[in-house]
Length: 388
Image (cartoon, rainbow, N blue to C red; front, side, top):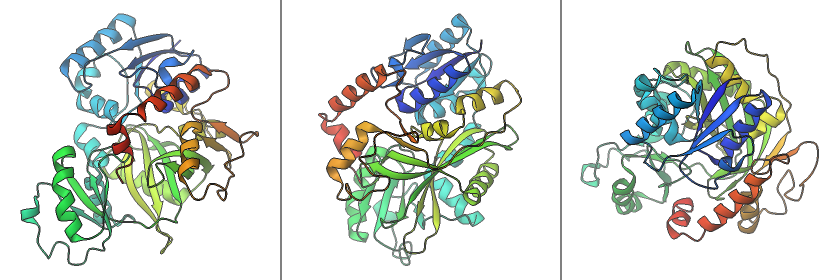
């Protein structure tokens, strides 16, 4: 029996834990937050709470002790921070356990949103017009920099998750006022053309081996998301888009990526062009859409780590997966609540599943939902999630 250690929690952790359970793995979980779905799954064989910040040396040493003491075979990250931690400490951790991640310089070329946009510009991959602001203060801004830039825009930190730190910028004067505040709090930023609402959002998941060969891929349309101004998926539907899979695969080859990558892609409603927005260096919460549609993503990852022959996975389109908690918040805030397709009121059916509720493992839903409700009472959390 393979002994797999999961880093961090969330609904993505819950999805992967259940897919690993299907192939009879022993699953350990290292977590930093209580009651965040995955830590309450009945399929976890052993749990380890580490209080230290994930980038601290004490976290690394504690993790190595866990791996050696309990004989884990492989490690899978469930958060951006966990993926960055693995990449940054790759040489040390590879002595103790198997995992697949890009070398840190290559990792940053994909994870850093501004660097990714620069690559897309050089290679001609579809992306929004972007200005790199690394190392610049407002005193360094010149009229020439913004002469042909199409305001309104989005100001985005280069390294952030879940929409944190992103701000809508109406014009140049707005940028001068807001940029110093965001840079101080989140670090280096870039300015990106604002893509008007109305186009659909696409997510592409790709796994590449050590030679950047395509091992497996899946695609899903984000139908609803929360916050409604731009956030995590609360309803997604499995689809296929070979053209965008090929573009995303080429990007990963260009940056010498290894392992899993999840692409966020947005359609420009005016030009109908699909635009690359960012790479998430780990499985997304909506990965359950692809799992329910027919791909055991946990098995894909484990087979690659242990050089086991991969299955030829195919999957069905039209599989709908909802995050019930966030979808309820979407319903409260959206003016499209009665017009969305698939219908918000479609709760049951053979093609309807849930990110946060797995019927044979229900405890995570109740504890995770209660935990999220408590978060809504914290002003810092509300401000981060509603920042756009």
